[in-house]
Length: 354
Image 1 (cartoon, one colour):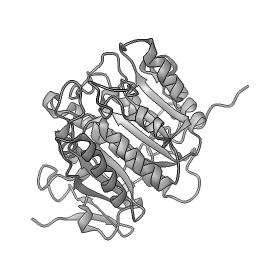
Image 2 (image 1 turned 90 degrees about the horizontal axis):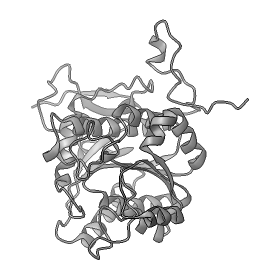
Image 3 (image 1 turned 45 degrees about the vertical axis):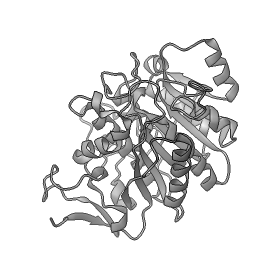
Image 4 (image 1 turned 180 degrees about the vertical axis):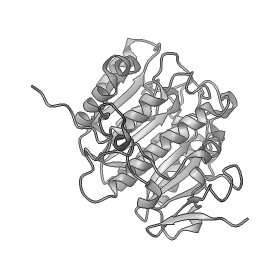
């Protein structure tokens, strides 16, 4: 079947859904070209079908393709930013990494090397998981490319800074403890967002604080709101090289039932998308969206949410490619506001103090 694609600014974009039905053809993320169809990618989307590090429900090894299928409905213009990301930069889907499902240590080494290979020519990486074990090798690669420790925002119901499970040092609950121990995170610029639920003991929080993490709980987002959450994060991270890791269980199970370790009381998909939009201008060097387990999903609720989260992360990378400051720029939705004060722009600037 002929691929009729949208092209702009020399970038090969998604298949034109006005000419080929969305449900037809092979599923790549957002119906974008494969990596082998472009000369060079500014952002590479890659799947990691690995879930051997889970401690409860398996199935995230099928998450990347589930997100790709759910992304068929994404459109090329993002009015929340007034940005057409696939025109600004070349984005391509590299398919899936082939990792050993029976040997976690070997899998981690493979993921790290593949991430380095995919970013060797300057591309940024957006990874679709897979369980959260994969964040450690991805952070290793991102820190190597950045030339030193990087800032990190971790969206998750859980801390993922535990020491071991059943004596295993590398699991989906341990990646950020290992990352701190390895010195690849800037411990003055790391935070969890959306954490909630029971812990094994108060020591979990004490250890997490000792590692340098700040915490914005899901209750904090509810009571303080998106704008205050964004202001705190921007103040903490500044313009450091930033990696964002999104465990889809940061969302309430009502918004993401298809995940391995669901916790009640999470944030909404609207809140998550708006928080990411508030990071406009921040120096995003890489990101992942993990823990989508399609066997527990219903009507693609989780897959759709994850595909939109990934879309906002790509848009942030694309927006940063535009010369000049983007802060305060009117958004597409703002320009159409009717009979009401326009909402604060995606470029969010902290309110001035009186």
